[in-house]
Image (cartoon, rainbow, N blue to C red; front, side):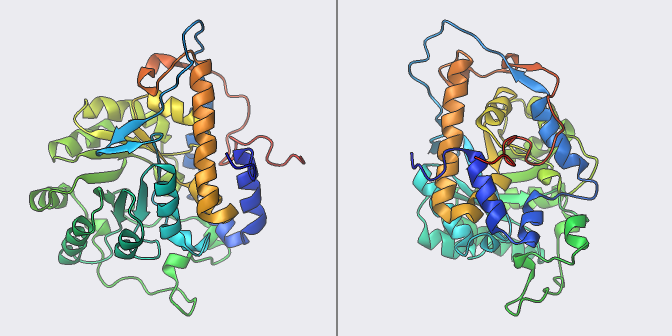
Length: 363
């Protein structure tokens, strides 16, 4: 491992020092009261890991297959818009980091460069996530091009029917890079957008027309998990958009068990929402996730040092997972079950970065 960053906290601290206020607030902020975001962290902090002893942990397995890809660890780089605002390489840099480490990048349609350029420039396995800023024929064309470009799956984000109010941005009239034109001014809204009118009939039409696996990102209850599998959806992505959409929502981790139950093994489960440490990954896997996505950590690592820092961040997560899995008395992530986590009292107030208690210490 590189010695530039010895801990994840150092990556976050470097990002905070280098980011302008607008980009910093964008990545740490959430909707309205930011309650949903705080609940995401609180859900992790209310669970303890069960420690077992006298088990052979001399060899640890953290690998897992997802959509035919052999993952070094079941941690994906989640779709984050405006990555080009954190490092000029944007989505391409993140995809290259994922390839270098041995995982999958989920590329957001709000990223630059475009998805076909990223496919040409980076051979690693990728998933493409699309916001429906056009009509249905436009969407169908994009899906066909995604399939032709060799993406492993196509992802629709379904919890952005309307855009939330993120008051950190509203108060200073800040606009993300993905919403600015070449002159730096805000772009006008698209003339047609399917995002508010998406429904299960649209999902059915996609599944009837395309063979590429479909990911629905933003599932947050058993009812929608059941509908997803009924419509042939291969991947259910449990998420509350990092607390950035519906304010006062449940924590994503609290919804994960019921989604897993609703899917009943008929779909792959990806989870995101508040993951900051390797122990967070282990808790999500124990509760039934096949893999997890990391968004804020990805953006902060990009700001701290581009693709190299993203790889380092993944190395540190891997190290924390390996160490703590062994201390739980387990030799493989396949041994994780709901019995491995126990309710516990949190030891501090939840915050978007509460996984880093030494962030403001001087070392």
